[in-house]
Length: 417
Image (cartoon, rainbow, N blue to C red):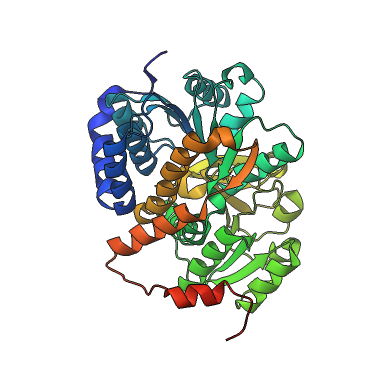
């Protein structure tokens, strides 16, 4: 198969510096890499990856390669691929098929090239690789033992396939592990979304009204960081329990059309489509900023925004201005794609250290146990979650208590006393 398909291999030195920087700040993955180098659990194993192709993902690919895997990788979003990082991986002998700004057709062709490795293990972010293995590239699925899914949207898609009885192999929902959603989804998304927005706009957050649409773990992180920056926070939800939780957390809760009239910055983070559309845009104030933190660029209805605008123009990198008939302006960041990656560098390295450690351990688990698992969506084994947390605490110099044998027996008994 073709070794790589990238913009420019000469960009590799710059990408190598980025990868080396994050490696220093990913102690959990470093411990796992050392173990993989000793044990070579992926010797002879072909791994296909589709995750946002930046430095932290690149280091995960290198850890798998260090464990003996033949790795092929593409991005999971056309705007999140960093061309210098892709070049650095290609220079290390990893099959890379991705470039920044790929068209829709190019993006799919890159995914197909990754699957031509005929993978044993799939590591997906959003479910596009798995979807192709069940549709256009079904003939390449014959040797797949199983895989891992990184994000909420991808898990939604997998569960829908499982419910219809169409999922051909077992997939581990890495997104649903405690060391993933408690930290990556909450702290990682919260910090990186605001880093992307602030770097892109160079505008103040304090004093503004921020509307967070969706109050899952990612939404919680976005709202928490907005409040910390001095914003007034409004939450919109469809789940009454989450709405009540947001209210108890101290935020205003209202319907999205009501929030459309008061917000200055809107951030969608639902995993659903059309959560902001023309009926919202028509109510918004002049100068509002729209950003998306969900996986696909369907949460903000871009065709409807363009349809009611009389003009549109790029006013700053990653900021498009849409002017409405009455002169009001609406600004869309990063084409409505994941703002923290389309207009930033994604989650902090220390956060992705835990998520990608889970990916590495789960990939080994699925390779070693996949033939014993039924096709469907499986949870990360609790012992893997616990091990990642233990390594992370050790790297921080933190020690915790341990249950005594008597305490363990007490907790496992139904007798009192």
